[in-house]
Structures are given as structure tokens and as C-alpha cells.
Image (tube, rainbow, N blue to C red; front, side, top):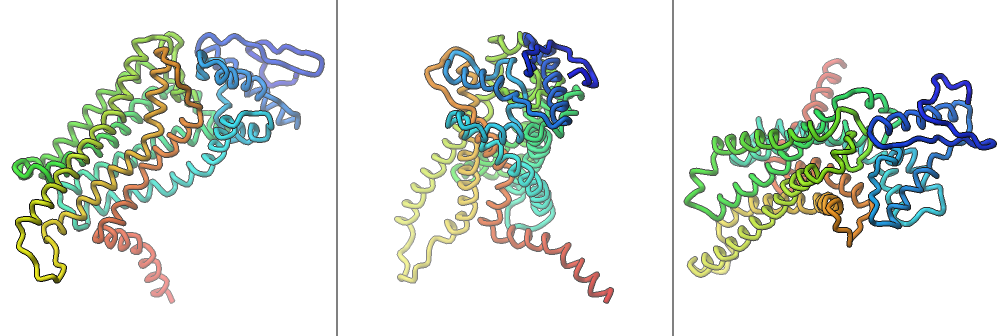
Amino acid sequence: MNNLKEGPEGIFAKFADDTIIVGRTGDVEEVRRLQKDLDRLGQWTNKWHMEHHVGAWISSFRERGRRDQNLRTIDWNIPTMERSLSSGLYWLSQPWISLASRIHDVLIVIQGGYYPILAIVGVPVNVVTIYVLLYKDCGLSLCVRRYLGAMAVADLLVIILDLILRHIPIVYREQFYFLVSIPVCNIHAVLLYAATDCSVWFTVTFTFDRFVAICCQKLKSKYCSEKMAAVVLGTVTVLSCLKNIFWYFMLTGWYWLQNLPWFCAVAGDVQRSRVWVTIEFLHHILTPALPFLLILLLNVFTVRHILVTSRARRRLRPHTNGDGQGDTEMKNRKKSIILLFVISANFILLWSALMLYSIWGRVYDFGYRSVYLDEFMRELGFMLQVLSCCTNTAIYAVTQTKFRQQLTNVLKRPFAQIHQSIKFTY
């Protein structure tokens, strides 16, 4: 222990052949100092091929939080090594951990491959989608293309800011530990949550636009236009940025590299303040709880209108000669309606777990503790939420024939050019 490159900032208590790190963690700086000692000790033991059991200390708080629901597992005295690939593998090797902890650690291990693959697929897929929607004729109106293009841009930003710059560094914490020395986390949080709000509320605005187009024929000519879509999307973007400025003041600039529940360090008085807890609770109500409710209601009203209109048209339409020919107008609307419902269902299904856990966490902070959700719900919610940023392209390709054709042509073009170059060379 005497040959550590730098001396410990805390206290190393030695008992026979064991060494225990002792430290008081009352604020962010004390947590950072204690974590630095843990990391330094871990590097030293790895260098000399010795065993270190940080898990025993972590587990005392982890299991205590599950036994006593009056204690949250996001206290400052939890080391930030708990959510990483190496710690997940370590905990899975322990036979005594609870079922909920084992599920949590299985998800952490899965995230080690899931998040990088999702990033590798999600970035080019959204870039190609943006190109096709903006520059190719994909059989959709200019208004719809404007909304879908904005959703793809927002999804791309979420993949970069949330998946690549947040979740992957947390899972591979040892490789991204240098981030703790870059004090820009609160700025990152503002941009991330603003992009997330845009992604969610762009879905709401698209749903409302289709609701007006289908159910409100008098407003359709005025509202469902490319110019109005640009105004709506611009307004949502500005409001989303303004709404999330509070994160800059609530969080510090230091990366926490852990979702407890934030990925930035926060001061102790902020965490215990009912004012900040209330503000964050309202944040989770506005995104995604309120959009969740609005999308459900708009789709219910749309379905109701379609059913009523269909029955009325069948009564008024002359009987066919039995050749099975249907209503041409309803057939033309069919693909647009399917696109609307599939996008809405995709959002609702993939955001449900994270929405429930986020709202539960803030209600829990207010003292309503009759229900307890394990941490694996949070990890599952994050995995599904980032997946929602990569699924819209597949939805467009399945439901829109012309989009699928244009997407196929764009993807084939680089290979066709390579083939032509090889053919010309030989």
C-alpha cells in the first residue's frame, strides 16, 4: 500500500491483511474524494493481481434500501461503480444476491453490447431517414414530411446526447472516467433534456396534425400546411430549450457517471429541497406523462371519428355490384391512419416503463412510499426509451411503400458506385 503513486485523500484503515477505506460523504466533493480513493485502490490491486471487494460495501446500502423503503438507494454514500459492465459481471457471480438485484445486473451486462450496437445502427439510420424525407419523393405530403423529418433530427440528437455521451460512458465507466474532470455536465443535461422534449413533443404535434386532417375538415386547409408545421415545430423547439434551462442551475458541471437518478453531481441541499423536487416532478409530468395522455386521447378521438364516418359513408354510398370495390377516399387515408397509429403505439409502449419509474421516484421523494419499484425498472426504461429513437425508420419502411423504395435506393447507391468503380478498373 505504501507504493501508491499518490497518497489517499481519505483514511485507509488496516486490519491484519485487510484494508478498508473510511470516509464521510456529506456532500459532492467528499463523494468525489472517496470515489477517487476507491479507483486508486482498484488500479493498484489490478496492477499487482490482487483481489479487491468493493462490492461488499456497495451491497450494504443496496440491500438496506430494499429492506427499508424509507431509505432511497440514491444516497451520496453509494460508490459510482455500481452501474458498470465490470460491476454487473461481478455481482452476477455472487450467489447470495436477491432476484431483483440479479435482474438488474443482467440488464447491465446486456447494456454492454446493446447500447453500442444501438448507436452504430441508430446514427446512420436516422441520417438516411432525414435525407429521404427532405430530398426524396416518398409519397407523403410536405406537411407530414416536415413533422417526420423534425422527429428524425430530434431522435438523432437524443442518440448522440443520451445514448453515446451518457449511457455508454456509464456502462463503460472505467474507459470514460476522464469525463469526471470535464465540468460541462449541466450544459450537457440542458441539451439532452431539450432534445428529448423535442423528440416527444414533435410526436404529439404530428399526432395533432393528423387528428386535424382526419377529424376537422374546416381547419385542415389552414392548419395542415408546410408553413404552419414549421411554425409549430419552431415554437416547440424554443419552449423545450427554455423549459430545460433549470437543469443548469440544479445540477453541477461534474459528471456523476451514474443514474442516481441524474448523471450529473448535485449539491446535497438541492437533493433535499422540496422546491427542486417539485420542479423536477413537473418536468416528468410535462415529459412524458402529459404527451402520453394527449397521444392516447387524440388517437381515441381519431378512431371514434373514423368509425362514425365509416358507418355514415356506408349508409350513404350506393350499393356496389358485388365486385368488392371499397370506398376510394377511405383507401387513400388508410396508410396515413396506419402510420399515425403505429407511431403513437411505438411511443406509448417504449416510454411506459421509464415514465412510471420517473414519476414514482419523484412521488417517493415526497414521502408516498406504499409502493416500491426496483432499480431494474429504471434500467429497462432507459433501454426501451433509447430504442424508440431508432424504430421510426422501420415504421416508415413498413407502412409507406414509396419511402421503402427510396430508402432502398439510397442504401444501394454506395454499393452500386463501388461496383461500377471495380468494373471500370477491370
